[in-house]
Length: 299
Ligand SMILES: Nc1ncnc2c1ncn2[C@@H]1O[C@H](COP(=O)(O)OP(=O)(O)OP(=O)(O)O)[C@@H](O)[C@H]1O
Ligand SMILES: [Mg+2]
Image (cartoon, rainbow, N blue to C red):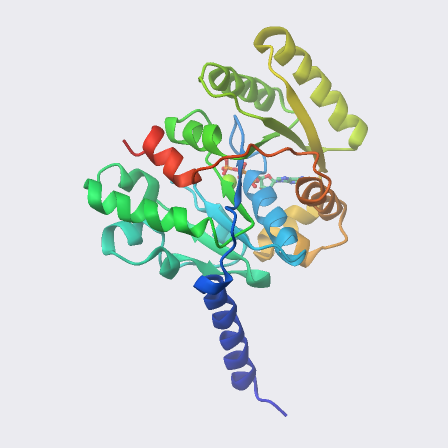
């Protein structure tokens, strides 16, 4: 019978192989990853949970996925997965690690890039070093089908840049009036930008589809009336205590409670994103990180 140490070594080898495969030049794709930014006007509405669980479902469905925690202050995605990464993007910038050395392999073989204060650090770098990091980040886009960005809440310039240049934005709202008001404020600022952004709404912490549609309709009414932009109802996630249980166990809900009501909603959301084509992606011919870097951010 195998002892535990042997099995652990085998698992480590499998993970390492999986990790290396991603960066094997022969296995790179011809097209760039679609970049989905998960965002919200107000903090604490469920962005990190949704980003982590959708990314895991995509990975389980066989897609190559990179989850990127772009929250400078609170790297919650790591906590939700029970992982304490030893490095972040900031270490690549300050200590010279390759980006591929910073990416860790989480549950289900999901790749995670902890952003840490990395994006803020980039602004202070000399041009050649900055270009080197951007080149590495851009090159990553050929290794994945999807890059899921868990952004900080709010209307920080850096967040806006992520939203403007992502393939698609998932805006998470909840029935709370403060969430609705802050989401409206975020959309208002986005409408002032030259580039138009496709907004897909996910209504979190509702009782049912009807409840979600009701919240969306009320929000949409105000958006149509005052901002005159089209927003798309993408999906909803029910309030579910299993999310809190999963958080306490530091094991993502779709793995610890795969049949819970909220996990089923995540399944639907993932399907809508990847298979049903409800979510039309902005076609970009240049790299996401290049666009963000050249056009505004980090300058
Ligand atoms: N559908 C849900 N049902 C019950 N609780 C939920 C649900 N979604 C999120 N929560 C709870 O809401 C809290 C915030 O979730 P999360 O950390 O994902 O939000 P966030 O938007 O990423 O926050 P921040 O802006 O601080 O990064 C957590 O305590 C989580 O357990
Ligand atoms: Mg978060």
